[in-house]
Image (cartoon, rainbow, N blue to C red):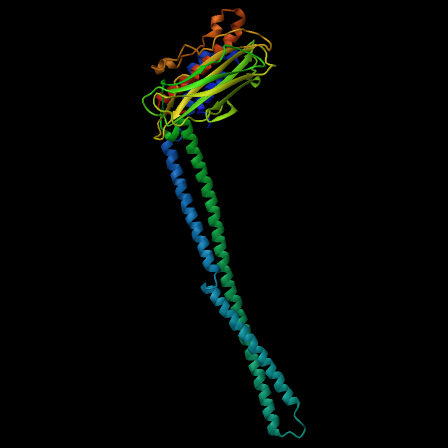
Length: 427
């Protein structure tokens, strides 16, 4: 599941060039209200409006599907042998066939009558000659009548078939139009549903406002404050529901960012953060776009431990890193929330082959944004303090600048997250 946009914004800010972070950190925090305004401009449709549009699009689609179904049924009836025009065409064809047979018989009668006339001997009486001639004349008259009847019957067949075929073509065309209308309505419905889903993703699950919940904590333990390139270290991420209510679904998040000693060059591609759950020993790589697998449910007062592993390539230069952790919850009734602050655990990266000896665990930043006053939040920042700050070494200053700069950006993001939540929108 993708992380919420505001969390993504905060992480994106955290991996921006540290020098820029340090120079614009206060402005970043100050600019968040403006970003909030841009995130939801006045002319942007509300959730209610999008829901109305989605409902209207669904109604149109349902009508289109019904019309297509009716068109299909109508075509089946029209194509059936019992359809009136099909029955009429069949009757016309039968009449034409009968007329054709009568025409053949009439023509044969003329031939036979002519043969009788031709076979009269010279000794035939006038009465015999007159009778034969009369029969020939009658046969020719019957043949002409049969020919006219056949022509009329053939014309009726053409007329009946044209009527039947025109009806069928019209029914096929109507079905084609109905199918196109259904396809267009489905496209509109899909677009409306996607717009609504996107708005809900930005403003909160099911449109509900999320709230900050400091009692949902994400704590890292066992991560050394110094990690040697070319090694891997295992540590734990404990997610705790400190409230008195069960959280139906808790989604933890973790991400690591690192630079070289100057703090200006990202080495994220050389630093890998993985996790595994109690139900699966397979290590999975985390990224800055998705939560880890959900914890469902997390009961009141309960906690869940996630195994984490940090691997640093041997080619990584000495530098500095920060592991960020957070957590959000979503309940079946639509309520949601999460950490009002994003924790950043900083660590030094020692060059491959280094032997730092025993080191303390990485510590999170101790300065939190003020979430009790919205006005104060607009300029709040969250510098990281801890193992790097404690070194007191001038050589650690670039790394400290990186960690602090990144945490300032994250702090601004956290403040923005809280501001959005307090404003009643779900990032």
